[in-house]
Amino acid sequence: MRLAKAVLPQLTEQQASLSGAFAQLASLGSRSALGISKVPEPVQTVVQQLLGLRLGEGATGKDIQTAVKNSGLFREAVLAKGQGVLPPGGGTAQTGQDIKSLLLQLRSFLKGMGIDPSPHKPLTQPPVPSLVALPRGQRPTLPNNAPDGDEIQQLSRLLSDTDAALSRIRLTQMVSRGMADDGVPQQAGRAMDVVVELPISLGQETGVLQMQVGRDPDKGKDDETAEPGWRLRFALDLTATGPLEAAVSLRGGGTYVSLWMDRSETFAAISAERETMEATFAHAGLDLKELRFLRGLPQKTEARFGVKLDRTS
Image (tube, rainbow, N blue to C red):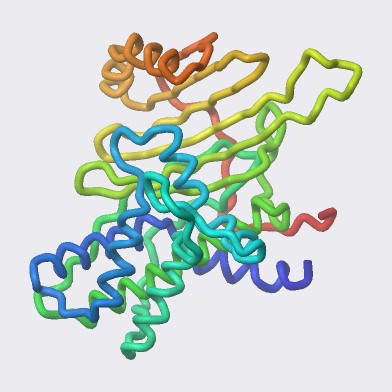
């Protein structure tokens, strides 16, 4: 806890949404494909690997499961066990190919090229990840389009955003391990067990899906019929859709889903797909007991942009 006390304030100050780093990665990838960028091949390789770890349109449950494993949240635990993570689409597990590991590789390459981070800071910082407050979507970040030929400025910005993304991942890891909280009063229901953030690519932009997962405690031998339930909450905020939030509960063999949409046009578009969504759940073998569409967003407690230590952990 002494180490956490020293590190958490620094991480909170340095952190920014992963969308910033992925915006710069996409920009560098495009410039490399056009022959504009002349960065070394190892940098180009790790850039393409990182971009390949984003969720895409039509992502399945298996895709999301793989993305969670590759998020970097479990990097140290995986390395300690000598296990690897899965490439997108499955296949053979590989060690050191998760988002955190690849960002660390990218940082090392850029520093080895003599690149220094730019002094820029994001205009707004996302709230500290939380296991008790409702999730918050993070809007896509536009890449910083420096003048043509100003490769050093582009790479300097990329290094700065890489450092901010690494701080964000480390902060998320510490929150999920119960080493910090954001000082926000708990919403109705139990606290979640894990919070994870997944980059998602839609069109020309990369947003960040914040997801919280929790499992109800065992009922004990006295209640043999009641299996522990699973709870999932997530939030996403894209240019095309606006803010979206969802709560999914798996209990007693049934699936219960609530989806909140801020924009009226998004509410209308998704409501029109109700039958398709119901068929998708049925095809996945899930017994959909409830599917609710709600206009507006759940009421949130004002989040803090700093952290406080959980001294009981």
